[in-house]
Amino acid sequence: MSVTRFEARQLRFAIGSIRREVSFGLESGDVLQVTGPSGHGKSTLLRVLCRLTAAESGQLLLDGGPASGIPAWRWRRRVAYLAQRPVMLPGTVGENLAAAFDTSRAEARYDEPLARRLLAELALPDGALDKDARLLSGGEAQRVALCRLLLMQPQVLLADEPAAALDDESAAALVNVLGGFVRDGGMLVLVAHDERRWSALSRERLDLSEPEHRR
Image 1 (cartoon, rainbow, N blue to C red):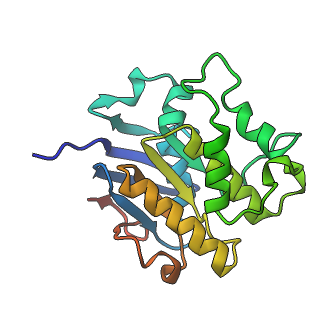
Image 2: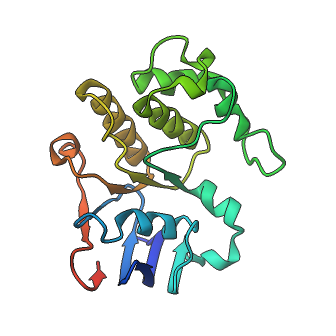
């Protein structure tokens, strides 16, 4: 019997005057695409799932345990959020990647060889680690942010339009990396409008254009 590893139970949240209630369960290797018109809460849902925005009611569970039993900072390492416009700190790309591990809360050590490999797989140029992070384009910053999250080895990745600012070659590289994350047992919750770019990933859908959403 399969075991649900990431679950939302009657999770209620607001987006403006709209109220949503969402229930779903994901297992290792699952991909859930969140769809719906602009302004109907797709990005807000991702923020609720990573506990950056509070739900009005309902439950989040990971590996059978409630989110309330896990400190928020630790939850966000296990349920990682890739925003559309990620923040880059002053310094190089390498310093931005290492900064996530330079804390007493770090649960792993910074792996520079793995960082170099991920950056190459994400179609970022040689020498990217030494580049000033604040000079990155929007698409470059999003791929660096994805690299930073993957280095933390999350169980769930929440990705908000991760390929929207990319050309076709870079987008294909990003989709391939996310596909590898899923094949290795990760769970992906995805907001994306360009179906063509994501055709290689088998996905279930959660449609926020409907008044109530359960899967």
